[in-house]
Image 1 (cartoon, helix red, strand yellow):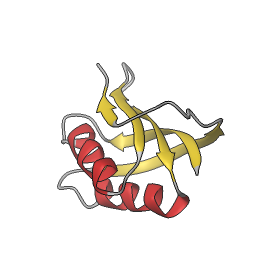
Image 2 (spheres, helix red, strand yellow):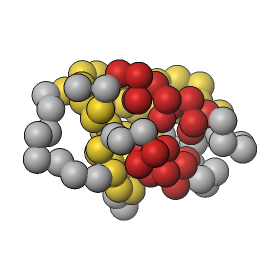
Image 3 (cartoon, rainbow, N blue to C red):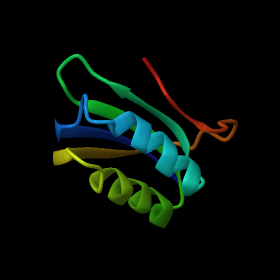
Length: 89
């Protein structure tokens, strides 16, 4: 299990990114959150096994209109008590 803080840049707001992230995270058993930022980027903290996190990102990229041009990734300590994945405002 790992937890990652990811900042996505590109055409990532107003294209269903957060909705797809929530669906994919649930499908692949990941926990965490996703939110839009004031600068047009999207921030995500996601926890699960490496393969599941990669599958979530691939599922988001397959979305119509989503174009990720850059991802900044940091590894974080696990949040053992976390349950579910949600979009944060």
